[in-house]
Length: 241
Image 1 (cartoon, one colour):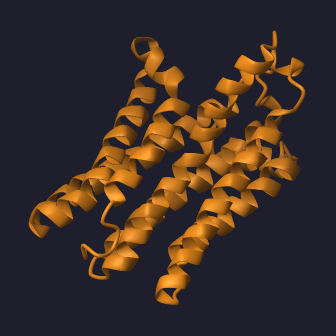
Image 2 (cartoon, helix red, strand yellow; image 1 turned 45 degrees about the horizontal axis):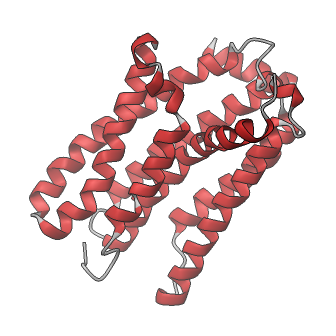
Image 3 (cartoon, helix red, strand yellow; image 1 turned 120 degrees about the vertical axis):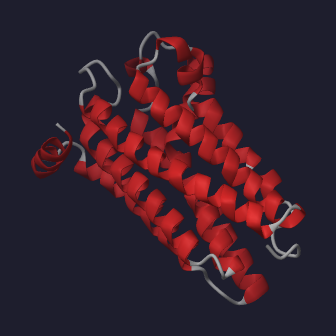
């Protein structure tokens, strides 16, 4: 990687990594009691993220050969993340009626499936653009945003529950989807900023950021308006149940 490009990328990637870990803190706090398929997803995703952080530093401070070898390990891990993530979708569909996510379980499962699929697509396109440093790096950076949304929504409820201290989610002065929409808007603003910076510096708009931005925008009407539409229920049940 050109040292003039993303000289501190590995440091910037630590921030979404920490946010993701914090968002899924319940998994780590209950690690020993979690089922095996949760561990497949949690551990493979964490290992993949650590490689994502390390790769820019390795490229700039070590050899390209080491970067490629570590990249192959990351590609295998990305496959595990994708496969185990799709298995986790099944758990979303079988939520209990008391869950605050119950009314959105099908649209959320659909979104999770989209995010997981686009995550793997971004990894594949990053590999295909390996000789184009700028494009390769941005496809890898875009993978962060496919996993960030579920994490920061969960994380947002930590301070909200501390402030309002409700006996149940129904006592909160807002619905769960409001938090989701707010977080989506934040993610979209960050992506628009990255697109603007690229255009400002290079007079170029990268398709990786455009793709992830469009899907993050579409995630809002998908969640709010699809919910458990009959055709979506049938689709998701036929695929996962």
